[in-house]
Length: 360
Ligand SMILES: Cc1ncc(COP(=O)(O)O)c(C=O)c1O
Image (cartoon, rainbow, N blue to C red):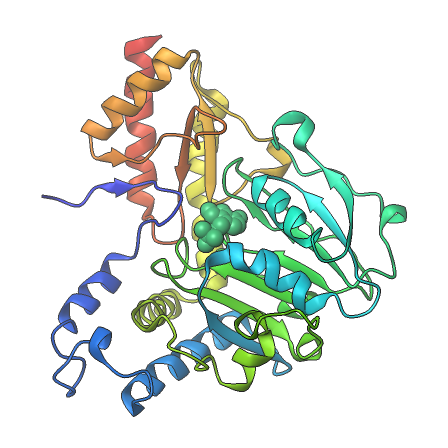
């Protein structure tokens, strides 16, 4: 079967050249006579792979030397606990902005270990916008300040970062890491589940300022202690070897394309095609506040539930798949991560135009 345009929110589309390279190296990686999946993580061949992945990520994101890069497991959801367990080191207080269910889950988890203050929320309007933040509500004694840079379900993103002064900014970047240029030095911790913009599920990447490592709470399990993984070069136990290898291929692909700033321009262009159409359509409309629109996840609705269902069914038949919105919000959502070619977005918009003419 031909490949489809996969608009899944995650796990999601991977660059085709990456899949082809993995296919080529499947039976024998280099001269090893075995696949990466079959390789000891302690072998020199594997060490080269993980080192290259880290080096590429450092280069692409311009990660300063005083930050560690960790390749972990447990998904972004494990970070909801690891963050407080490791960062509650003085006041045991933290500020959270609730911009979606992922931020809310992170907040609930952190509440188990310390005093957590909500400094902004957009729950009143189904998280369809990023709330204005009042700096006077920020706690200057907080151990950290937590945001979700891109809200996968609702299609919003921060266009400016909150100014938290000396309080380390912690960001769940699961759905927009590598999609736009960020100044890593503005963050204490960045984490991301890999399964959207970095590679397959099973890998969670953490970028953390060294000073924030080694202050874990006493109850922190060994595996949830950043120091455990930082000291062992992400090899304390068996890392998600194959996912790291694919991540390395994704990073090579991104570098070859020109890096994150080039990718950001491509993402702006791709998103504009869909947003421009949504803004001019008579039956479709975007659901996120215009000022906060995501470049990665674009939720939209038509005039009725029936039409939504018909649209999803007919789009699927045309090879435009996984357009159903998250079960908590309904409607449609097109996730157009880095790996989605512009042709995929054009094909979607062209089908939407045709659907609109037929169903006006
Ligand atoms: C922004 C964000 N944070 C966290 C998660 C949870 O990630 P995981 O399934 O890796 O725990 C997701 C999953 O979609 C997400 O989009």
